Image (cartoon, rainbow, N blue to C red):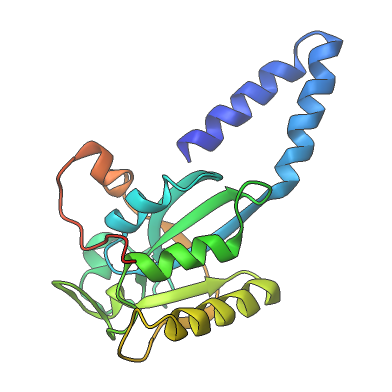
Length: 194
């Protein structure tokens, strides 16, 4: 959320500036129509966020909980596995600089999508592999990327990633946001597999 807030602040400053700056601000505003959202789950959200934030075109990342049945869950609730939520990441990206397919291609390389309710040492439904699609176009792209990842030969076992409609996303507590930036060398089970 931090990067997006700065962009909004800069845009407001441009709107209050001279007329020539206003036309520049309108161009920026028009570029806002290229902003898209992706919601993914693939184990502990710290490692996913750390990798995805570096993808060109990604404007903002936020970790949180989605796909469950308990309103306003906390980490303490989710870690029990009883809320049905997955640790997830919400990515806002500029569709003119990257695309949903590229994000999903990286997603299938950064975690093991063949393990049910597990990533590394993290075990439980909150660590499941899932793509929460926002619309039919995202659903089709997710299905296509899942098929391509399976056909790549990178994974010997079947990919078990769920492809399900997006539901309410609850931002995680502040100490989880940007965790590996705040704690370099902290725990992660994510890396890029070629």
